[in-house]
Amino acid sequence: MKSPSKQDRPFTSIVEVSLGYRKEVELRTVGSRVRHMRETMAWTQRELSEKSGIATLTILRIENGKTQPRLPTVRKLAEALEISPGWLLFGEEEHNEGKYPTSPR
Image (cartoon, rainbow, N blue to C red; front, side, top):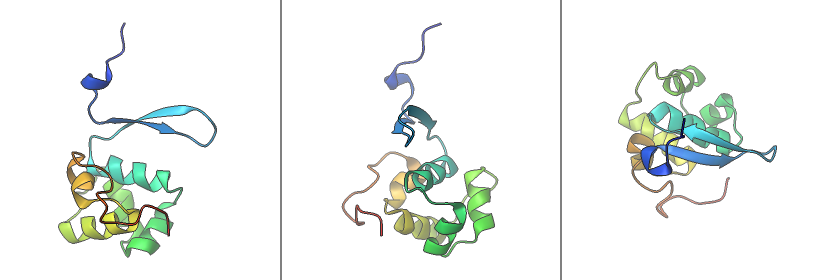
C-alpha cells in the first residue's frame, strides 16, 4: 500500500529527533501542536508550566485532548513557546511571525 503524499497530510511535520532519526508528527489538534513545540524545546510539562504560568495538569489535559484552552491560556502558551497564537490554534500560519524571539530563553 502506498503511503500518502505530503499534500495528503497537510498537518504533518517531519521532526529531527536528537537520536539522529526522523519522526513524523501529526499536528491536527491544539494539544498535538503544544506537545510538538514543548518537545521541540526539550521541555517537560512542568517546565512549560513554570514558563507559561499554566498549571501542569491543564497542560496535560490540553496535550491529551481532554480540554480546549481558552484564549488567555493560548496566549500564555504561545508566548512561552515563542510561537504565534494563530499557529497554535489553527496550524495555518508559520510558527513564528517575527513577533516572538527565535532563540530559547
